Length: 207
Image 1 (cartoon, rainbow, N blue to C red):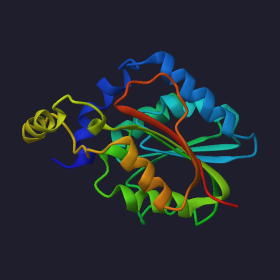
Image 2 (spheres, one colour; image 1 turned 90 degrees about the vertical axis):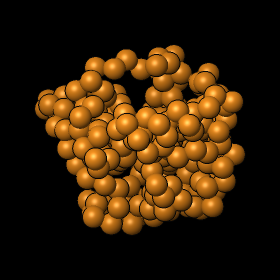
Image 3 (cartoon, helix red, strand yellow; image 1 turned 90 degrees about the horizontal axis):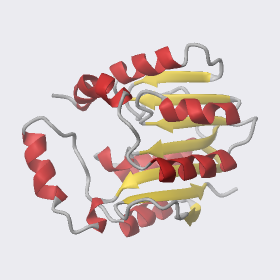
């Protein structure tokens, strides 16, 4: 099963799933909104069914969401049918995504997606490249190496059974190093009260 097909199968259930830590999630949203300006063009990668995009869109001129799952995007478009400044795109975040050129995006959000990517450093470099000078980057990432819970064997078995997607294992320290190596500055980890296994990070492209 491809990654897109895996998430297609989960899309309806995912769209109805409650946020696991609502208080931390609201703090993340508040911080992200604080980085946005009314004239901004903002992109969310791994937007799922669009719930976060619709929360953030009122703070931007244009908000774009991208997800590898066509079914997730179908649901997102249904949710956004009365929201004029939101556009959703189905496809991978690679060279085939040509909606934006280098240096043309004011902000990029990556909530709950970086740990699901096979080549995280390459994605971070692409994010950096798309951002305009001074543009912001926000991520919320599962860092399962932060905990003693034996996620690795559990997820390996679940993946064999087709019950879990690919999950990369990393610590907050590794994630911060990768973000800095991609060229970002002002890399910060605001305390939002999230679980230890989740790293919330803000950064910006110099300029």
